[in-house]
Length: 305
Ligand code: PSU
Ligand code: MN
Image 1: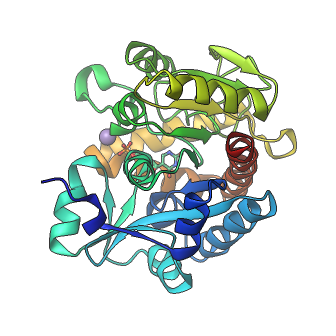
Image 2: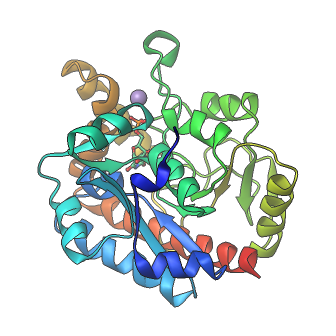
């Protein structure tokens, strides 16, 4: 028998907000445990929640702790995720294992979407999504994030995808599985640190209101799945595309030499990019994620009206 309530642990403030139809924005924890270094990630974890609140929405960071799908983490739980000791990276396939064994798990985009949908949260802000990896025609390394976007009714606000991925193939995959890719005030699909990737979006949405309306329409129709809102990094924090290409190529070469595969690939590449850029990329990463939290909150507030 399906019994989601048994596993779901929603913080009282979030439950109250959901019950009264207020805007709530989900946030992931893999970015904390496996995407950003300590202690910068801890400052980030608190600040991103403050940004959501400043826009009039309630933040809901998710994780798997003590056999529960946690929606909303307290300060100790945020610290635990940010220290990242013995914290696994949990994608859809890992969820039951982590719940049943009591292991602590950081939620990826895919898992955060799952948990958000179970709790009734429609909007989720992150940095970048997973996608089709370069060389996937041989490795078959395609993030579970893409299938989740196809199936789960959550709208993901991100800064596009890092070019550690094959962005062209990622967009093809999203088209195949029916996921709208909406640019926020842009015709270009952004490449995380860069405002342009060389690929376009399906639709340029000029404001949060229209994005809320598109999502309402999709879900009123009963269409399964979510959408991507691609929000370019603010110009003042943008990095040079060609310099980042060089850094990413170097990280990919290093991963190849070290024989990195599967779920370890993305965290490995992120950590190496950070090291190669001496913290410059880290600063941009934080800023684009704040920017996404701000937009996600505005959309969620519109949707709640
Ligand atoms: N891309 C980033 N930063 C991240 C991630 C992706 O630029 O932190 C994280 C997200 O949690 C995403 C996960 O869901 O990595 C994807 O991992 P994989 O490629 O193994 O599916
Ligand atoms: Mn993968």
